[in-house]
Length: 314
Image (cartoon, rainbow, N blue to C red; front, side, top):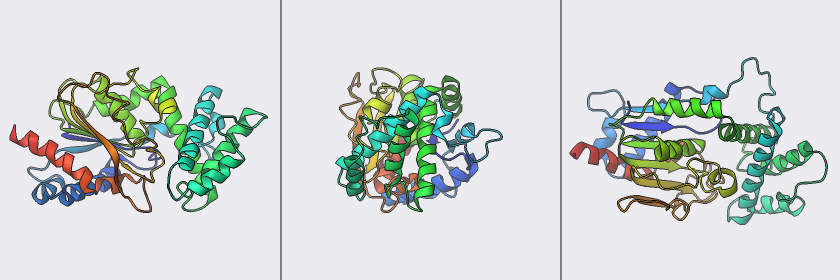
């Protein structure tokens, strides 16, 4: 069982547990150090020394690999029609939020919406309507740092993985079990990034057996009401009653974190001692959704240090 459980996000199927831990744990130590806790940061990294907290990545990216897939594995048309519709709705919401929010992609998103209303897709086959929305999203610099061809593949991969997690019970259970295998009475924090924040929330809300000092969600899409919020478990969503403190951190230019203020969405059944802090709080520069960039910030390191220090003094 781990003291800190890390849960990665989308598009990590070519990574592994060790490689992700090698990037995330030093970044986490940097965040704790930035928050003014040098001594604690030294125990976090290098990892594995006497006195180091047990920090482990709940890796599930391999579950999205398909044996024998040749190049076409990220096509949304491989999904059942219901899942394709969900993916198109998620893409439309991304595009809409990009147009509404003051961010580097706002003008591009508005231009796309000028000839594409994502709430009323183009006439014709559903596949064409879905592709039109995907193309609109893929034109955003947020998704296309290295060109349009890469962007379309990344958008398709992202949409497909989120959709499959929400729609396929067998995959859902396997991913959840990977996380649950690392959680025990000594767990002090669960940290989830992107899709991993959705997984982290659902675990915290439905499966904890003991109080958890910290739930930390970074770059979280939990505020996407019609696509994520209305489909997560439990329904209606509520504050995880065994979580002492929930901190959700977002970069203003992170389009996945479409609605950073989760306080009104998750205040149902919140215990008197429960604390939820959620707002625009960091600037990750050119990579607003990068998990390691979030972890290196003092705003992230502060609650992590508090959870570990609190555990050490009890």
